[in-house]
Length: 197
Image (tube, rainbow, N blue to C red; front, side, top):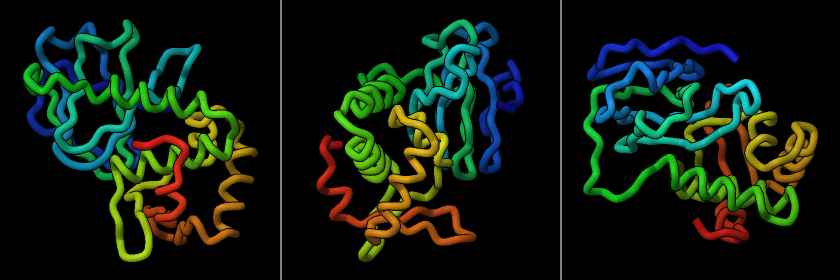
């Protein structure tokens, strides 16, 4: 897993291209600062050796990542789309909402569903409802995840996630146009998820 280190200096606009990752070191951050996504979508994941790559959350514009609540090894932020965030934001205590905690809870709920098909459907529904949009006859995600990453998120192997995605394509419930970063899902598939978003 490759990432660069985020500078210790507070920056009002850090720009990252799709696929780039930065490590947020909590020891280098001041106690009251946090990161705030200005535009784009990010994946927050654990760089620890034992759990390397484990997804903790997805963040979008307006979401904050509190640096005072990170594990001692920090976390990594990966740009799933072109990303811009500020590293000098003030913690918004008045919202009473912590995006990372909420995402972690929802991802944990998905992992406890009975079978891989249900977990995959619940994952796609969560992603579409939080980060996607309805476009005509399809629900669209503005990014793609690898089959390996999907396997990690639903607690299965890459082979299982590939097989399940193949079934969705065959049933015309998922379309992934080549050359595009978007992923389209049938609304009926999203609406019948075993978990409500």
